Image 1: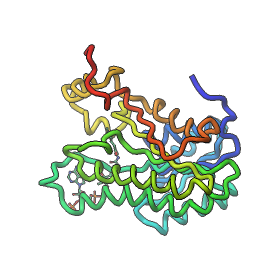
Image 2: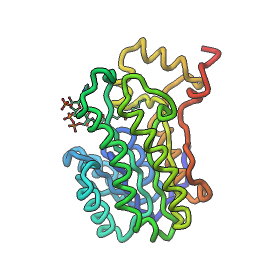
Image 3: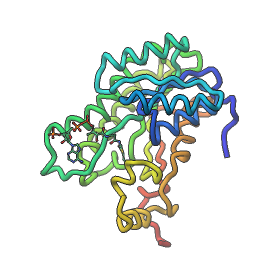
Image 4: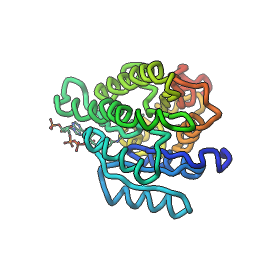
Length: 261
Ligand code: HXC
């Protein structure tokens, strides 16, 4: 099951946190659909292996080392993409940090680290990419990967929940401010994604995973491809009237408990 292969031909996309997990899946899917992709992250070796993997299938991919918390590095990464490919049409703010710690035990620095990655990092990329997205001949796209938990409390992950709620608001503000620049801004909010480090950490023990799965009407965790396909749709011309939306990819989890499980 896939979109047609030229759907994103000649578009240039930057995916933060693109060397592993959901970010890598998104970068790979966008490249498969014809986009030239740049992936950012903190580890040069992991990034370069991921970019070679994508490029080995006759697609264009470049690795860029940049920590989303460092605005100068963010600007430099955007500039590097534009000098390599000539333009920038799509930014996927995917990089995220998270770990479980009760609020009463969370150090101020733990809070700060996650908020800086998830919320500041998203704003920094939006700010750095704006002028380029505005010039996109396809209409710019800025998509942030959030979580269904941004709409509710998230016991054990107060930092990530609050940061993602901030992202939710930020993206809606950008959609309103940048609509006249033809830049579409949306969030994609997955529930638990089975094949990621994050899910292993959060739902690693079998009893928790089973409990969580029981709350999902579709009866399974999402796959990375489930998420990447939704992102691809929002990057495509098929979504040209969608801005300020949050696309929930949670198997119906937020609708309440599954009745038949
Ligand atoms: C308590 C912790 C901790 C833990 C780190 N800290 N891990 N506190 N429990 N498990 C604290 C540290 O003690 C320190 O505070 C502060 O957080 C910063 O930690 P550092 O290791 O110095 O930070 P840094 O090297 O910048 O690493 C960032 C990180 C790290 C977020 C803390 O975990 C990371 O980079 N993770 C990789 C990315 C990631 O987590 N991806 C998963 C995303 S999943 P002190 O006070 O000691 O200085 C996701 C959604 C999941 O976002 C959705 C599932 C449904």
